[in-house]
Image 1 (cartoon, rainbow, N blue to C red):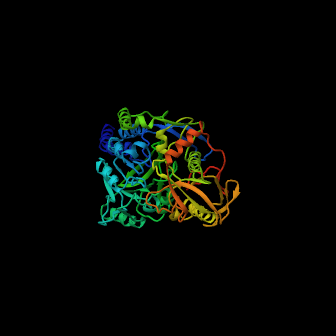
Image 2 (image 1 turned 90 degrees about the vertical axis):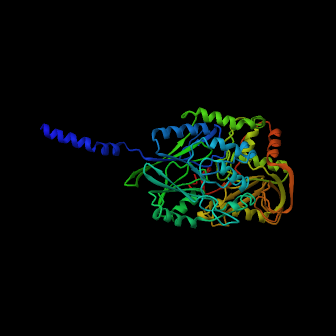
Image 3 (image 1 turned 45 degrees about the horizontal axis):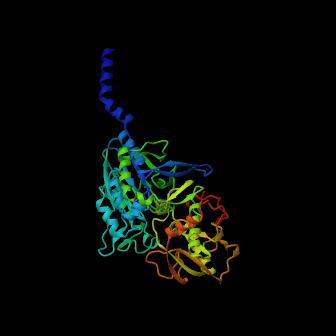
Length: 524
């Protein structure tokens, strides 16, 4: 009996390291953010349930809180974590704009980011400014589909391979190929963007020649396009998406998982991969809400955030108005914030119709003072107003095209942000009608649209657009650039209205969708 016990003990200790490591092995963790839009401070954030029925405004985000959570996760899994950034990081706040993104570089270099891709807004200051920021970052920026217009060579590495716990993980970078037409054309001048057809050959190369164990696609094309693209790709383990600010709590399954991690640094995406024989045998996804009442802030990063903001503090802390309601920009069709902005544009130009673009960026405004810094979050692209006269037929054609851009049944035809935000105009449409036949009713003021009548309209100029183009409407009559920019229009409006309330009318109505539409993909 003693001899048998001795043998069993010997066998136990011989194989204990094997059993113990299997039992206690930790997965490889991929953390990522997207669309932080230079919102480096803690801010108000609107949270809602997955069914859209419950809402709550809370304090959240900020790079200090993000850094704290990332460091906590890394401490629990040493040398087993990668932290990625899916783009739209250096645009979206006053300090970012005024420094062309450079003010954020010291902060970003302390965030322990392993690699990033450029989003559609990374070129907002021009390609030279982007390349300067890239050169000063201590982590690489990758993108498989951006090429130099003169040399034809790739501007960034198409992918990187990292060795984590003996596992070769390849990350492919892919950004929005529509940037040259989606953004004002001057922004990306000098870059050539190629489409998704380049991805599969890269995946095949990584698998066959580089012998990668895990292949991750990190993209900035938006969730609907990411899901559509994933249905055509083989050899990808997970697709990490950015651009549309979608809050994905449950992964979308399409050949492989597709996820997206919200925006404004209010969320952190966490993907845990369990490996066996160098293959992924299990996956776990968590969208972490970076609420102030749940997570602390990293003190060193908080001090660096304050140092980053200090040169701009005096100017950006000026009070320009007051809000009596929550104002936010979280809906596809219309938002309380953009209704105020469109009203300000129309009022400044004294025209029948005002239009604000369908931007997604800007954290909410809560009741209380509105500061100069808020203007730079609403409109980090501050252009002059332009007026002109457009026919009813042009307006109808414009809206049909914009609705198709946002709600096309074919994801490949989706384009840009959300629907434009009107003032002085209401639109009623049916999403599920055929393209070009969705409009059911347009009113200017309280009167039905007349196709052959000319209407006065104002919107913001876009750098590089022809003089007779107004908010993507070509060949407008009597175009005129005003001396007033978007910020000044809002300042004047806020001064005129001592306390801003959220407009309570419905201006853009999709008759076959719920009242609140916060996702182009889920439409709920």
